[in-house]
Image (cartoon, rainbow, N blue to C red):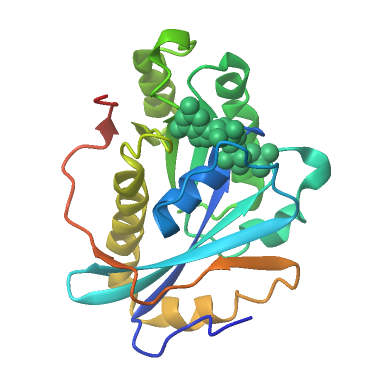
Length: 222
Ligand SMILES: Nc1nc2c(ncn2[C@@H]2O[C@H](COP(=O)(O)OP(=O)(O)OP(=O)(O)O)[C@@H](O)[C@H]2O)c(=O)[nH]1
């Protein structure tokens, strides 16, 4: 594996993508990391991850985002996948109601394997497909509020709210960990050891500066 942690980074934050197969997790990640979208993407097998550097309040954060298969049979070992993750995007497809209903199931897994202070954002992807929408935004907001999650709708295809959703998660992780000294950096360095992880992108120059968001709720503006 190539250099997983640059000395010049102040923090390395691990976050995970979860949600049913086909909701667009891999495309959200490739849009965020490489500004790429694939119409013909294959189901993920095992684990992939990507990095992007983000500057928040003069600190350089390396965001390491992990992606695994929504399909049970292709998934990596669940406990390894969540280990050390500080944030999660729980993704559903706004045109597939079952993927929203399964968010409850994903929350159960998150609570079992994720840390109790994880920053979790509920993400309604494919909001470019308004004509075939099966999950209203208000309903998803209500669920997010009850579960104590942030919520956003995105489109990996149209590149709507993709940077925003990742930056929101990373900023909130930063805000919740910055008072805890640099132990986070040391702890995180130990996490990048899962042998079956496949690195899909490293680009130290691919750096972005996060600006503070005041609202947790975003909808698509197509
Ligand atoms: N219209 C539309 N299609 C999308 C969007 N995001 C992803 N897709 C399509 O949805 C399909 C599945 O996308 P993936 O990113 O592979 O989904 P996934 O959640 O990673 O799937 P698994 O790896 O099986 O868990 C692909 O055909 C994508 O082109 C989006 O925002 N809008």
